[in-house]
Length: 418
Ligand SMILES: *Cc1c(COP(=O)(O)O)cnc(C)c1O
Image (tube, rainbow, N blue to C red; front, side, top):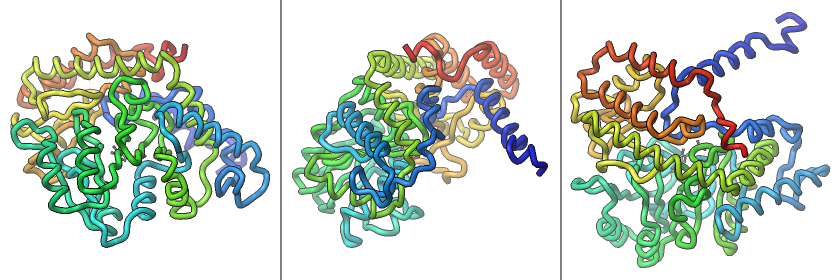
């Protein structure tokens, strides 16, 4: 590398520019993706990135933390206001790490933990056999009913009664319906278990007052910040009752992590200010409305939706009914510049590498400023790709639709910044 290349890294800069162009010229319908505001993103990589603030405000392992302390306390206060809870920990480096930290602190290896089956919409950090959570604790699982592909709370109760878990985890990655936290709380209380809500996907919709909050029903809530919450990627929040504050903090540090990433905490603090604005509530209402428009488009084109539709930002399409697979449709859509992901569906007969389903969501394109009628049109086009025997001619149609509808469209629409 030449001397100047060391300062202006052309190879990396070029890849960043290519990625930016890719994001601008394609449509992301990945339910776990979003675009954070340029203001939030501007604080990632700020000067706080280099500060070692291992520990917590007022009990750090190094000095020079007076501003780091103020910053972290500000983020904590904002998180408590946004989610209406008594304690927040803002240090987790991701939601997956937050989940594992909590398990390590709260459970013994002999404890049984209950969660939603991965295939039915759960998450790999909730006891998947190939994940550390699955290897370190004993698990039992509940799922959706065969008849309507939604949670059957009577069945959840009987599994809880039979297994007497230490905790019941609810919330997942591909369950398109809302969870009745009050019912889950009653079940948890009846078997003397903690109710733990993993809010990673719908945290934004809760913060934006568009769907019911897990509080006051949940004992503990973990979440990522980059999905519907529209914040920086990487970084988890843990929210809980005041009586669990010490345990939760200990779980992260010194339980599992070392020093937090203070620039990420700065970005999260800015995010937690942003989501308190009325504009964010408007954004969340749009996300829900737009998911419904996708639903109408898909159903119009003859696609089959898991659970018959959606009550959130997320839709799961059953492809087995059309004799195709997730891997095939994901690839075709990607050639048409529409980015999605293959996903297992309840009662899937295919391995995860193929998958019988496709997962999409409305959060990212709503951030870009896509309108309801555009979502409907995207839904129809995806539905046609699925039902038309994977007709390759459709790829050209998709590309021209994407080209027309992304021309001049920013990633983060300035209308959300007011
Ligand atoms: C996305 C997700 C996570 C993981 O979030 P990361 O911050 O990417 O680790 C955890 N739980 C659920 C339910 C998720 O959907």
